[in-house]
Structure formats: structure tokens, C-alpha cells
Image (cartoon, rainbow, N blue to C red; front, side, top):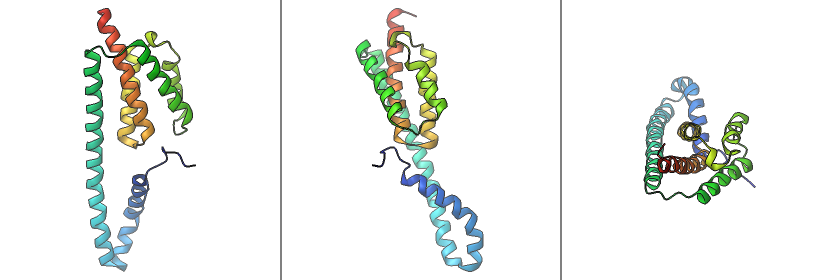
Length: 164
């Protein structure tokens, strides 16, 4: 069974466009109309990639805003934070697109008790997986980012209550 986190068709299109960049100059001499059509498609795709990148940025901003709002309202409990931590571990364990370094980063933070997680270290993980999703895409990166952002919300909420 194919993983839901498998490389998307967009990734395949990117590969095709990279090949096209190499082939296009030779194609101009052989089939100018085909080269023209492919050039138009190529630049349309480049514009689409920018739009997709902008959309990813909007999604990340929206998710972080919602988590911050929920944090300020004090909506994160210890039990919920524990559940979120277990979810990140489960996702990371089941899926294999993570590098050994990424698994180690997650393990280092998630092996701690929820109340022992430092704001800086969870913040670094949130930023890392947000950037990974922006650059590479993939549902796995987004799922981990979203759950880590919620866990960070709990850690920040706890710090606010403690007055730290």
C-alpha cells in the first residue's frame, strides 16, 4: 500500500520542468512550435510554484496565529499536551521520509516529560518543520509542524501562568 505521505505529483512536475530546462534549447532548432508551447507551460508553472509557496506561508501563519490565540486563552492542558506529544512520536515512527538527524531532533525533545520541554527547543523544532514544509512540501512535515506548534502553545501557556 502506498503511503499517503508519498511524493506528490507536484514533485514529479518539478523534475519534469528541470529536465525541460536542459532539453528546451535543443528543441528550439528541431520543433520551434513545440518549444514555444513548452516554454509557455514552463513559465506558467514557475508562477504557480510561487503561488503555492505563498499559500504555504499563509497556512503556516494562520496555524501559528490560531495556536497563539488558543495559548493566550489558556486552552491547552497538560493532558492535551501529552496527547499531542504522543501524536508527533506516532507520526514520526510510522513514516520514513524523515532523516536520521530529524528523528534524533524529535527524539531529543519528545523523550522529555511535557513539563520539562523548554520553549527554545520546541520553538526551534516548530521553525525547522515549518521551513521544511515550505521548501519540500509533504503532509508529514506539515502534520509534525502543526502538532509541534500546539505543543509549543502549551509550553508558552505554562510559562505565562508561572510568570516566567
